Length: 175
Image (cartoon, rainbow, N blue to C red; front, side, top):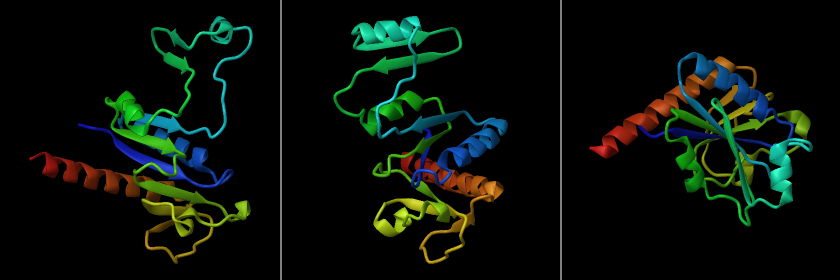
């Protein structure tokens, strides 16, 4: 069974990470194996000065792996961002993979919006594949369902419904 990928998009400060964290906890409690991808539009550092792995990477290693009995991490220099299909392969054993960011990926997405960000809805700006808008203002002028940002049970129910539809479609197509 292949994993179901679902994106969470929105402007900075809209609450994407907070919502994803709450949703992951609920699905993990239900016994689902969850994956997560966080897109960082900037450069990032997962290690810090003083650690051996940091020293190796900054000494010039192109690729560095940290491996332990319960965790694995890979740091690799890249000229270009890893293609989505390559990333997908890392999650073969997951049921659902929640993806933060990656507005252009061809996956269903939940838009998270807060009026405080003073920004336009992404769905109104042409971002494709938005299947749900989660917001703190109930603007119902979209062609997709809208839920209040604190309705975590509603969001979870929606995700379960669209994941089920995906699974049914996948089973039907596999025949």
